[in-house]
Length: 374
Image 1 (cartoon, helix red, strand yellow):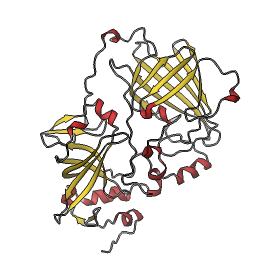
Image 2 (cartoon, rainbow, N blue to C red):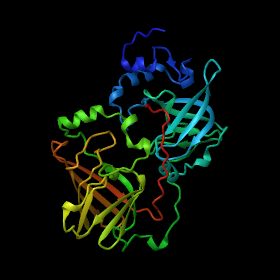
Image 3 (cartoon, rainbow, N blue to C red):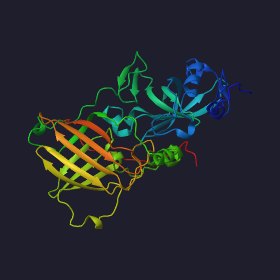
Image 4 (cartoon, rainbow, N blue to C red):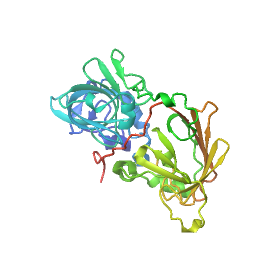
């Protein structure tokens, strides 16, 4: 079949004006995805080129579609759980589609979306966004469980199926700890949950950084796929809880994502030259009233963010952790300076809040090779 559209994305996907090629090479019409295909085409044609797709979810369409199928496999693991559905196409033939969750398992569990909601053989409807790069891969927004309820897979999103009860919007109840109910006298040393965050906006990248970003391939290069440890500063840009532990001359910062651990030395080393580079870098802290000030250098982690933006081992990270006046909020402010890949320093900030009973959960991550290119 000839396509009149010459876009590389269209040719890669096998899309023509009135049809879409399924993972098995068969055509399915718009009723399989439930909405007019021209909107899907428009979205795909306006996405970034395949080579510049990153962990920003740009590989997935902005148009939400619906499919129905039977669950044949469940991979309930971080970083993103996957349900494999057996779906009948218009020719009555079976096709396997993988529905990947927006959120990590740890995020879903906190919202009440647990693995036991899904069973092998269960027929479900899924609101999804098709991938423009991985055939047979869909990004899940919400799953209709077939019993009048839906499990929301994307944090902060509205329910897709309006007539069904919702699991995954309000946080699941956590065990209460009455001794910590008002958070007083605990200071910094407890578990903190993200309230909101503010990124640096458009990055002032040097030509060297732009060249490295252009060559970054998420499916081949992103450490998420191999469950590799995440280092500074990316580890701080997390939606999962963090915990500060007083260890005397050190402060340990546990980060749920990747089972991360930062060690902040409260006394400077006698000889900085003897300290080796590491993915977390070397952090030195001091107190200034109710603010913990931390300077981190010697981070060997190669990325500035999840989009493959390069950072050098010469980056310096200046952080301030400031307790709120009510004792139950924590403001994180950071300035990142990199003479190799940033033309000027950038700033980030996050607000955390104390949630009684919150804990740091294990990061049970399983390497995912599904749909990846070699």
